[in-house]
Each structure stands twice: as structure tokens, then as C-alpha cells.
Length: 230
Length: 189
Image (cartoon, rainbow over all chains, first blue to last red; front, side, top):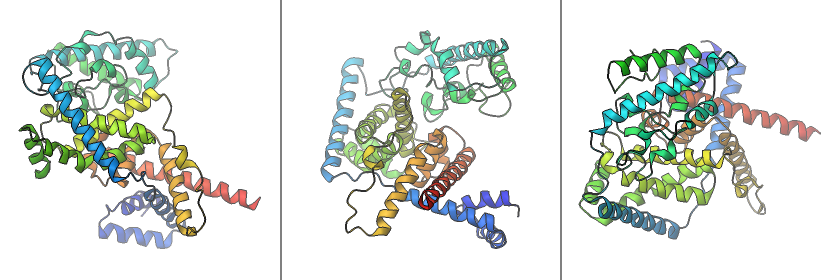
């Protein structure tokens, strides 16, 4: 076993993920390699120390007040929605707008990526860019209409909070990736998706999106990782 | 989703307030703990935990119940904490109460003091890890979540979550070792 493998397996062993057979192989290596044995000891020590960190102990009265406050707030918000919006408590947004939103988000994404690429192509730009760059670029699109769809907040975006709050750094792409359990808040924010990505990867991503948009397919066109979808 | 959670959600849907309270009571400590570990401020953690419940329960019709309610709730709490941290515009700050050296040393067994000091040091290093590593290590070590659930919360695959865990733990080890060396040098004068 190489030291690199032992290093990985040692963490897995401490995490309780190693099979007895792999554990045996690891132990064999550790009995012969003092550096790896020392590293394993240090890792165990660090994890053990961390496990000793406790959250503040709150008294019982804090917890009963907590649950009462939360229940009260949830019920009040639910009543508010019923009174203000008519029918039921937070209802799921009708699927009608989804393709439109997905398409609009796609167009938006393409425009952001295109702008980003344009910045990079000017020559002076960095090979990779970070979250702050993308936030800055996206901030210029905050007024984009799709964020203010009146119904969009109801069941999908953090309850009643408007998505506008999350424009920029927190724009999520789940719907255009095909939805899923968490709706729009279920996937990685755009800035995380492109953070640190190199230019060719970004171009491939942009091309994939454009192709899908051209084909009129509003969903499932943003590749999560690996090759750009087509 | 556990049957118990499904039953409680259904009961609340039928208007049973007790079911709502039970659901909140079941998860309040762990959601508070998660928020605290992310923002390291008790008052902020309390407010964020409450907001996470409100948002999760308010958005329940959008929850298709394919995942665990706990994962859904955690995901919302994590997003709220991220938003909070980004508006605070500073990296995670440590609670001064917790960074101070233990005051009442009298009578406390040395091992306990040492352990709490080491825990404080480890938490300090954890708070300075890159966000994804910090989140994954927190969910794994303190909430004992499986990697599938961690991936859903962190917005990555289970495999990537394992990689984040590996690097998080490795970084933690290096930082603690560095401190140990520095303390050793100080002690030697």
C-alpha cells in the first residue's frame, strides 16, 4: 500500500467507513510506516478534540419557549397566507410558470456566462475567477423580471421570502436542472457552480446551455459536472 | 422520510397544532446546534433556527417527501446561515465567551480543562475551514448524517461530500499540528 492510499484510508477508518479487510491492510502498512502511523494519530487526535466541542447548554425553559414561538409564527404565517391569498396554506406554485421560469433563468444564465466570458476574453481577466467576480456580474442583472414573478415565492423559495433577496450570490438552478426534491433551492448556487472553473469548462457550459435553449428545452440542460450537456 | 415525521406532517395538515409542536420539539435542538456551529452566535443561531422551521413548514406543499424531512429542514437552515454569514460580510467569528480561556480552573480536573481547551481550539480551526469542508465535517461529526443526506444539504454528490470530509479533516489535523509545534516552541522559550 502506498502512503497516499494509507492517508485516505486512515481518514475513512476514523470515519467508520472501512471494511475489516481494508482496515487490516491499513494496519499492516501503519505497522511498517512511522510517518503514516503518526499522521493517523494526529488525525484521530484532531477529530477527538473536535468532538469535545459542545453547543451551549440551553435550559428547558428556553426549549419550551422556542417551540411555542415557532409554532405560533408558523400558524400566524399560515393564517396570513390564507387570508391574503385565498385558498389553502402555502400552496405549491402551479406548474404553468415553471417552463417559462426555467427558460427565462436559462436566458439569464447564458447572459451572465456570456458577460463573464466577454470579461475574460478581454485578455486582462484571470484564467479562473471567484465568487466575488460572479456576484458582481450577477448583481447587474438583479432587476431581471423573472425574479419577481408574483407567485414564485409561495411554496418554493424559502416560504414567503422573495427570490430577489437571493439574486446574485444565491440564485439557484434546480428547476432548470429538472427540479427535484427541493425545487429551486435544491441545487448549488450559480456562483458555486462556476467558481474556480477554467475558461474551457465555462465555455462548454455556456455552449450547452445555448444549445438547449435553442432547442426550446427548458429543463435539464445544465450539466452538473463533467461534460457540458448537449 | 420517517413514518413518524410523515404522520406528524399529515396531522398538522389536518389542523392538529400538537403535531406541529411535536415536530418542532423533535428537531429544535439539532437545528439550533447546526445554526450555532455555522454562525457561532447564540442569538443569531436561535433566530435562524426559528426561521428555518418557519420556512420549511411554510413551504411544505413544495416538499415532495422523497427525502427526509430532517434533510429538507437542514438544507433550509444551512441556506439561511449562508445568507446570514454573507450579509455579515465577515467569516465565521468565534463567540468570545468560547474563545476565552476557562476562568474557573479551580477544582476542575486537568484532563477536563485540557479537553475543553483542545475542543475550543479544534472548533476555532473548523470555523476557518473553507465553507463546504466546514459544513460537511459539521454534519458528519456532530449530526452523524450519512453522505447522501450531507450531499443533498451541501448541494453536491455523496462522493464529493466524502472528498470534502477528507480534506476538512486533513486541514484540521495540519492546523492543530501547527499550533502544537508553535506552542512547543513557545514553551521552550
